[in-house]
Length: 220
Image 1 (tube, one colour):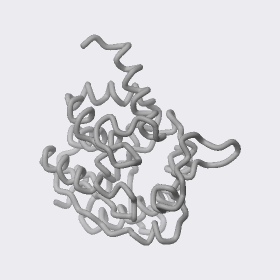
Image 2 (cartoon, rainbow, N blue to C red):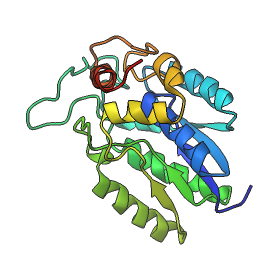
Image 3 (cartoon, one colour):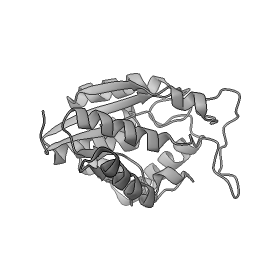
């Protein structure tokens, strides 16, 4: 439906993007999810994304972005690279996929344009910062302006998690009444294990530390 009350969510089926999906459902009349196949080793996330979108009763489109994995060097797309469990000093962790969010936002804007959608939603955050430069607020603002200039449009990129740490994101999920979905059905783990994941990759470390902190502030 071509309406300013519509939104497109960049969606992976992980904790952050799933929280954003339900946040969007609360704030917009019509929501569409866009999931990318970019050569990620944990490609099971695509099936997880489909399942969660079905639960949320939100249409989902899967887009081939496999060129990203072919032109970049990352432990998330290359089996020969051993994953960094900690951020190296003075460098990015090798779980960083160069250009990923830039490509995602660009492709998302094209899809949104074709549906008359002007609101893009992405789950990036610079609070629990993993060292990824394309998760920072200044990048999002720059990308927003660039997309508007490039397509002569008036897109608004929403980042509801930008200043939330993982404990805050768990709290937001609780507020949205999706805590069980986030806890049991999402895939955040870089090794492709749903829910609590492998427990020791960078994504699991952030997720589980946030859950522990959230539990300390809430009585179950």
